Length: 147
Length: 211
Image (cartoon, rainbow over all chains, first blue to last red; front, side, top):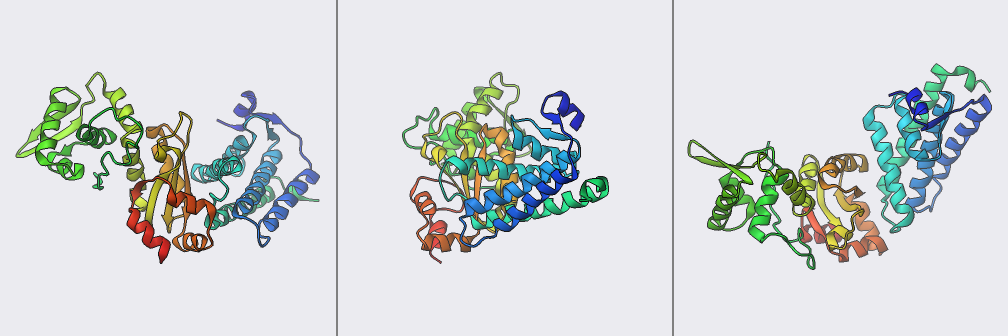
């Protein structure tokens, strides 16, 4: 499998990005990493915001590679694409994806199923992904970072 | 590498209100044999794990062997039993057992490598209450010093066998206590509701909540 195959399966569409778009996405990542730390937030929200930071980082990498995920299973595909963009190992991709499932469940079921420890774990994952995406961009797409 | 775990028997496995297909002894033994169908089990260890009378277990094992769903092997002075993969209903029976009686066992087996760092783990929600529907997730609460990543990765290993998504929530003991003290609604309602214990028991949970 490759992102090319995903394109053929209509899981992705081709996407032409720009330094401005990448800068915009990375700014959302930073904003959400900061927002997730705001005092007094519920664990559900902390996890949600940190999750969004991580998702936007993955979106930036996918855009730099020339694609974006189609609407159907958008989050799932964007997360899975990390294996082909920044080269995340299956275990790391799986970890991120299990947070996606967790977040789906908490969206419509019991409030409070997320512990502080879990929210902090999601935050660390998002921070780590941000670092990985930025260094991958520096190495592979320096022109997209010039702005 | 057989894992010796206490057998909870049909309690919890067959929540009140749902009809058990098999009697207690048969259900217990089928669960033991069919959730680890790739292993031979020493008769002595089956007797021990089943927690039922020796005669009862021996009679039932002989019956299952005659029925062809279990294979009996004698080596030296030891008698071994194993789920019989040549039985024409092997696949169906294994599915049936794992999805009912074997669920708890399957979860215990995948949590075993983390058991040293888990104080209490239990199934709650619809599966524990016996009100699950076909698409219901299986909710598992894990109290201990493990991460969500570790617990969810381990539990994902049982998903295929169980045929349900496993949805863990992990609380370090200190956070669990703090939130209970603050009358956290979700945790309090989980504590009151029905559970299937996987690691630890009601007493350990009460100890954890108080300390």
